[in-house]
Length: 364
View 1: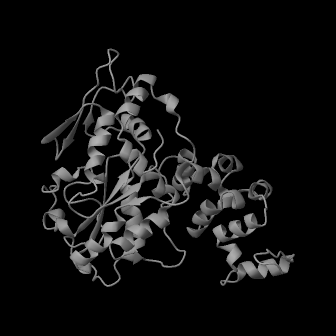
View 2: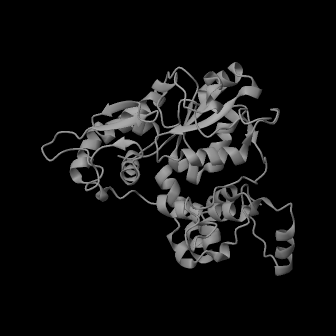
View 3: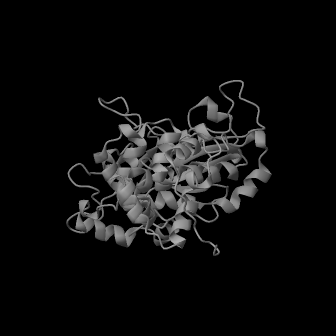
């Protein structure tokens, strides 16, 4: 046998049944990346296999995620599968691995904070996936040597926001939200995990749900500039409206807010993750975040808990897999820039922070 030669042997139906029922499955049944590499090393066209064998080959990682949550993929229609992007398309859009900024600060955080006191919290602009971070951490990350909390004002190591508010930038780090749980929390013991989303997509999403951000946008979105060329100012409210911050436009706001966390010397350890990596690389992303703080995945094997339900899962006809499958369909394609007025696109291209765009491999 030549070196690296791939040997294939016909398998009978009885043999196949025996293999699939065996807990100790051969590597080619669970290590997709290794299988793909082996096939491609023999000049085998993976796309042809995908066409012939359907969703289990075209969308192997999504199928594996769904099946690990006991979802019957036969309930997913062919029409739905036809909309799900292939893994090749996803890697073309977002790369072959997640981007996590701030991993160089992990040892600093672990050395400075006792394990029993470490806290991981989500942060980020609204519409970036902060709730998804909180859920993924809650179900998958823990500190094995930490004693369980005995009362409400104690943490198990993961909370749903930073003491200064998850949608508040670090300039407010010396303030605290009005909640007794956070009043007693040592902010130096908190590791924020900051979500960031592509600016064009984020602006469209924020037009639909602007929270406490104010600017005229009901008839035109994102509405960065007046017809005469002057920018349209926005302001955001913090701490129940007691504090306002004004920005030259919505694109400037995206810059100004995120710059406070992308600063290479923010003054405290923090991590930053891409919104899309929470969807397409949740296990890899959460594992890096958890281990950065000194924690570990609750299930060290393949039993990662995915968030599969839709955000509004109580609607009529909702399926238990709508969230995960829907996100793959929604975000597994290029953003349609034509939905943004040409004048706004021109402003955004001139305004958006080039350093941040390149740091997260965002497309212009």
